[in-house]
Image (cartoon, rainbow, N blue to C red; front, side):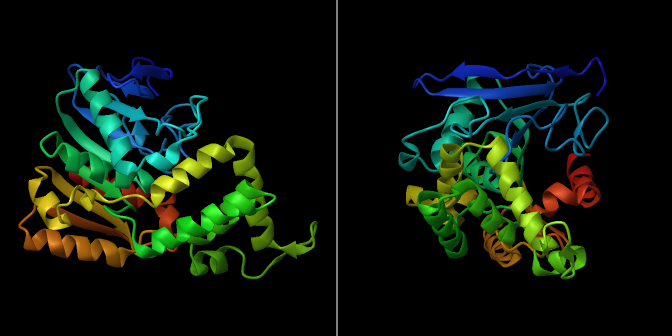
Length: 316
């Protein structure tokens, strides 16, 4: 990144209700430049770019989310462990709770308008919730590989994940291996492994790959943090306020760009197609972008060129 681009170390802000949020700020001064807010997915964090940045291909100087042009703000979902804190009472929270924290935090920073709000996976659900809570606050809403609600499939998936986390002797490792089956696709496994053998371990390469990802997560993530993030995945719902999705989305003044992945098993394309159809009936300013990929849900972290092309058309 360019030397003159501002990269903020992890900072803390205490909301008026006493809740503490940690965040990072990249790029231009948010008091004068257009603000892009990025909501991280389940096991990621506020470190979107720079050293160990999880979205370096997308965010940075002269990248599609250009830190020479934008002020980029990314909060940590409270309890994700990145700032050293976990939440014991996460069962009392849902994604609307987190959305309320994020909106309050942005306003406390003096940000009166969000140029673009982007969220991936769990972060997309929180982005939808933020738009529902503050319908006039966001110019462009971009949920990627996510949804405005937890579908039955997602509720079932997070239920199984929770059973593993509560009862397995290796909870993080096994939960991660199970989750990888939802993040990728049968076709991606066939293309990558094709039933080949890891001769050193005398197991299939797909098995050694799963073991690797389970062990890798255990090294960098806390069990309590994973439990909290998994809980939130099953609690996405902008209609919990008693209003239907159609009523909520009619209030949202943002230009909405849904980015789906045609092979996503976690947040299926079919759910997004239903959302778009309902929104169009309600005469909402909505656009649907579909990434074709064998990688499944994780394509938004892997298909950099395709993501860049879509975001470029939206931001320029």
